[in-house]
Image 1 (cartoon, rainbow, N blue to C red):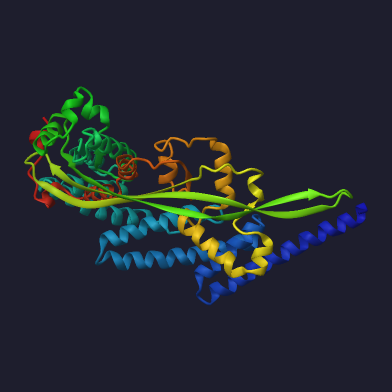
Image 2 (image 1 turned 180 degrees about the vertical axis):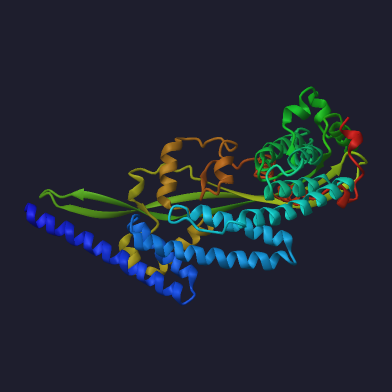
Amino acid sequence: MTRKLLFVFLAATVAIGCASTSKLSEKSEKKLASGDAWHAWQLATRALDKEPGNPRARSAATAAGASIAEEWQRRIRATAETDSVGAAEEVLKLDDFRAGAARYATIPLGAGWPAEALAIRTTAARVHYQAGMEASKSKRPKKACDEFSEADRFVSGYRDASQRADRALEDALTRVAVVPFRARSNDPAFGVQVARAWRDDLVADLAPPAARFTRVLAGNAIEGDMRVSELDNMSREEAIRLGRVRGAQRVVWGTVGNVRSSTRLDLFKDTVARRVVEKTADGHEVVRWLDVPIEVVARVRDVTVGVDYEVIETVNGSTITNRHFDRATTARVVWTSQTLDGEPSSYSLVSEPVRSANPDRAAQVEKRWAAVCGTGTTIVQVVEERHKSGSAGHSAREALPRIMAGAAFVFLEDLPGADDMAMAALTHGPTPLRDDLLRLDPIDDADLGIAERDDRRR
C-alpha cells in the first residue's frame, strides 16, 4: 500500500469513527428530549467509549446524567417522608452512580445536596444505632453487630457504632467443637476418624465470609492432650464436658450406625474379537478376526451407613438441632485371569463383519457386557488393565479414591472392605451438618431459647 493510499485509508477510518460517535450523540440528545434519560445516558457513554474526547458526546452525557440525578433526588426526598432508611439506601446508590459516571462526566447535584444527603443518611444511621442498642440490651449480639455495622455504613464514624459492632461480634462468635462420634463398627476409631474428617472440612467451609459468627475449632484445640482411649466411643455427657473445657459454646456429637453391605458377582463369559493384520507375499494387508474366549468377573458391593448427630449447647446440654442421614456408595471391580495377547486397541466385543451381518447379535453382546462391567467400561480398557496388572491386581484400599470419584471401573481381584467404603462415603463432605450450622449462624441464642453466655466467657 502506497503512502498516499494509507493516508486516505486512515482518514476514512477516522471519519467513520467520528460519524458513529456523532450519530450516537445525536440519538442521545433525542432520547433525552423525549424524557428517556437512562437510554440517553447509555448512548452518550457508548459514544465516549468510542471517542473519549468528543465534546458533543460529553455534553450529551452530562445532560443525561444531570437529568437522572435530578429525578433520583426527587424520589429520595419523597421516600424520606415515610422511609428514612430506604431513602438513605437510595442516597448511597446515587453516590455510586456518580462515582462510576466520573469517567464520562461530572454529574451536578446542586450546592445544597451534600448537606441534605448527609441528613438523610444520619437519620438512617441513628435508626440502626438505636436498633443495635436495643438488640444489645435484649442479649442479641448478632443482631446488634449487624445494626451497628449498618449505622457505620450509612455514616462512617457515626458515634461509637464501629467499636460497638466489634464488641458485639466478639460476643456473637459461636465456637463449635466437632468431637469424636460413637461408632457401632468393630473398629473403635471409626467415629474418631469421621469426626476429624468432618471437622477439617468445616474449618475450611465455614471460614469467613461463608459464616460470619460460627468458628469451628481445629483438631489440635480439641484433641491435643487427650489419649486415644479417651476419644473412642465418647458419651454425650463427655462430649459436652469436653466442649466446655475447650471453650466451645456448641458441640457436634453423634453416632455412626452399623455398616450394611451386600455383594454380588456377575460373570461375562463369551468370545470377543481380536483384529489381526497380516501382510501377504506381495505386500498387501489382510485383516483377520480371531475369536478369543474370555471370562470377566465383576464384583459389586453396595454399602450404606447411617449417622445421627446433634448440635448441642454446652451451657445446659440442650439440643439445638439434630439429624439422621444415610450415606451409600457402590464399588464395582472387574477382573479376568486370562492372558490376552496383542495390542488392547485390537480388541472388540464383536468383529466388524459380525456387526454388519448380525447387528442383533452385536447388540445382545454389548448389553450383557454393560450389565456385568458397567456402561462406561470397554473391552479395550479391560485388556489394557490386564496387561498392566501382570498376575495380580492392585490394593483394594488404594483404589477407594478412584471409586469415590466415580471411576467407570476399577480393575482388581477383590473389593475394598465394607468398613473402608463406609468410611470413604462418610468423610466425603459433611453437607447436612454444614447446612445446619450455616442456618444457625445468624440466629442469636435468645431467639433459640438458650441461656446467656456470660458465664462461659470468663
